[in-house]
Length: 358
Image 1: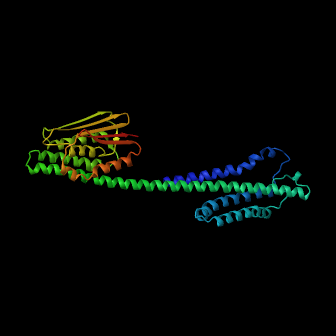
Image 2: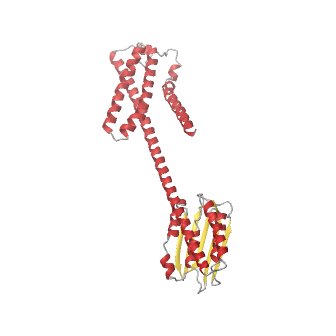
Image 3: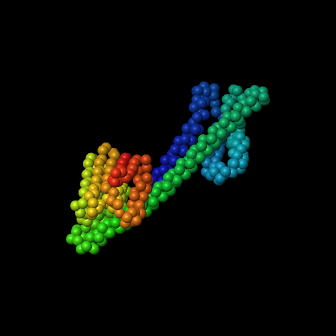
């Protein structure tokens, strides 16, 4: 339906453009047409009609055949030859057909009173007519070529953007498919450690994991989700992690600002929270994790701070899948609209992510 409407609009635009173009000579000669002595012979009318028909045919012949098959394929010589041939045909064929339709009473564009004169004067008048026809021909040629080239460039640009968009969507889908297994892998390891020691926290942990899985399976198929859902998800994740923590680790999570009515990419914050728990908890030494998420106007600010717990096993297990994925997703979904910084200082690891929403 949309494609059909575009075709109808295109046809109407072409008809309107040609109507305006053909009306130009009449507007130019309108003051003379008000003169009672000015008359248009049948031959003059036939010539104008034949010229206009040829120009219309040449316009579409150039834009639909010559430009796609010669100009765009860089067949310069053949294209120039075709234009010159069309010009020569235009200078003689329409006049010849007009002569067959109506015998020339007076020379085109000259009234009957001025038709008389010496041959040299009539030749000059014929030269003016040829100059006018050449100018009109090249006007139609220039306008048609420019429009056709611009249309093809726009179509190529649209195709390029569509291909790029499809490529980005494919890459985002691939990154999302990596996030879920990575998250479940780490969480199941935590529950496995509880099961080994037959902890009473195992069953609640499984239920909490079930809730998290439900969110991932239902919500993260979308490009954007409510920010409040992501905040609730982080709360659930922290509660799941706390079932295996001792009083040696202190965890705080604060959210503030205008969280309602904001949309954000799903699971965009959890890799940073996950890393804080992976490398910032200890059962032997005091440690802490601080997570702050705030919203001011259209800006989301996430700060994560965790104590660095030296662990050879953790360092060996660090593959960087989660962080690398989220960095790439930020580049794709928030290009030039996010800043991400992280550093290790004084035995603490700091992450600062800021996202500018549209």
